[in-house]
Length: 250
Length: 308
Image 1 (cartoon, each protein chain N blue to C red):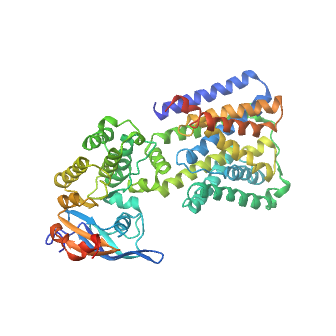
Image 2: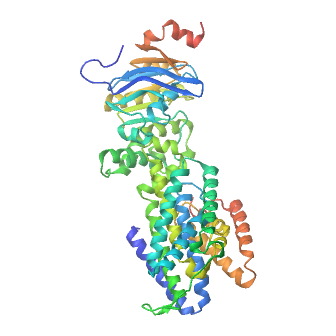
């Protein structure tokens, strides 16, 4: 089933997307639409092409075939920074903070470069906005610290805050919760749901923790060996035979 | 401190330096001081690319020589004032900086450095085979004895020009540091993928950095023919320029505009003193020893002792 039928056009349309590394087909013929305001879960075994898909969407990698449309505009060939400016932000699977900048300065970058470029004028109250964002993820007391002083979960929160600072309309969270404890996962989940419900940000969540994916997602997509094998209601999808087989073996 | 006020302070400092030099009233002071000032400009220019964006450029001699040989060409064809020659030299090497940047900035780390080194070798080969600027024989430049409208010796004039260039480069470097551009440069140094993901147009920023850095180095090299009065490719492309210009920001500290200045004053002065008292051959040894000491004892340079 395709999301958001009717009046509102999908925020993201992927058609016939393909990517290969040498002879290895990482993604083949991916078709996917994401509706505005939707919470989409994307799962798949290791090496199934999830991160490659994210990289193709965000411009870190170039897809060889197919096309990506974001809010109706074709993104193919656009460099990553233009996509971020267009409103498509991502977090990295392994946090990549700017090591020599303080936490507040880390958040300043997307405001200076993504938000300001989009609005075409200098952003007001940048300092206050950085602090407010840090408060949202519970890092306000460390605003003047460097990323090396953070714990793993704090690093992931910073990664998320930096993506939020770009004021995206579509946020792709690439394994934002890997390695976190039960409670920590719930914290991040609650944050993502709040972003989605209060600010209407469309979110694609890539995750291995099934409990998190199932509680978060309104729709679930499964990738296996670079192909989409399932797309639909999370409860139904996880019962599908080929999905079970992909995870547990047939 | 506001940039405009900072530049005012810089101008005051530069004028005081010139007044002090006049009071000392020894021609040698200008010759030695010129070299130290040249290194302040070079080290600051190098740091815009090397310190702020983290791209280590070994092609310094090429940019200096481009500026110097632009002056040789202009000297043979025209009788323009030195300040115009410095501007032309800056534009020429700035453009070459952008060009080299465009070709090499997809390379990272050591590979970029090697490419810039190769660029310097190519440039030297071209100049060595260009008869108009003297080829391998070199070019003689006859320096005017005095500058009429200022009523000072020409070496004082060169000293003054270099002071002016120092004010310009340091002013620009400091203005960049806490600006939007400076934050963009820092993200390139830290993580280019994350920078792109945050909306930073990394390629464009790197081209701005290579253009500014190369341009200022060319401006610093432009008065060189008048200083040495005989310029040949071997000395214009001297590797010691590269070694010194990289060592100075590293010793002073690369994270701030002050670092290259401290490094250039310390190292430049030591070298000049050693040249007079012991031997000019000692200067590279001094750089070597200082670098080893600082890499071990103060990896963040002199300013690293005071700032975290």
